[in-house]
Length: 272
Image (cartoon, rainbow, N blue to C red; front, side):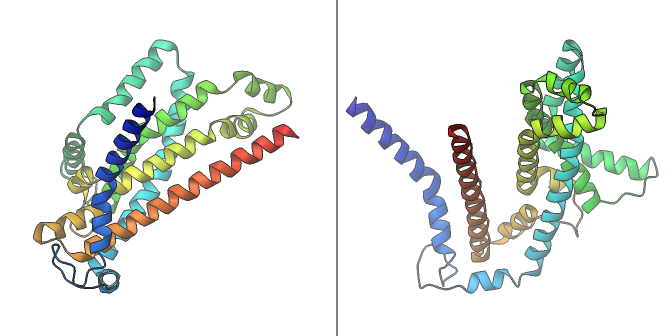
């Protein structure tokens, strides 16, 4: 038993080293005075200062935040409504719609990127719709590929919900809208929030679809980073990657701490 426990720890440690050692190296060299990746010549914050004076990166970061927040909000609203509609369907119709919803998730991103680009081009050239490649097409594209993730986060919460609570709210005097707002929404709120956070994450991370549907003046951060890395690996990119990693790590830690505190409060309430 001890031998197996030791092998398990060794395996876990090796996985952690494999995953996080490259990130550690990146963080260390983001403070390297020299541009070279192979030699340490001294500690400096210059690359972080230059990063915050890089107009191209700052503009791309602003576009990324706008697209991520706006598209995630709309995808969450549409996806939640779609999940409720699918849940209300009969067995076979619901299964067919869920299968169709899986297709965008399972398809390669390049297919969706090219198809969305062609759709926008056809809308402008053949249908006369005044749409140009830019923030609008980026937001529409991100809404499109984020909706399925919201649906599949909300549907399990709808299945777990007790149907009798909605009927009880109607019997106690609520109209259908009040019963939906006061009973259904609180029950499925964890799924809605999970879908929203997943939409934000995928939107911030997306490169392929954004590459095909963005304009020359509306690049997102992944596209801007890719464009600069084609020329050379700048220490500013190391600094930017370090900041993103630290922000994500802090968000995860705060989320876990919040969950732990919530569980503790629930345990205390049960004991009382």
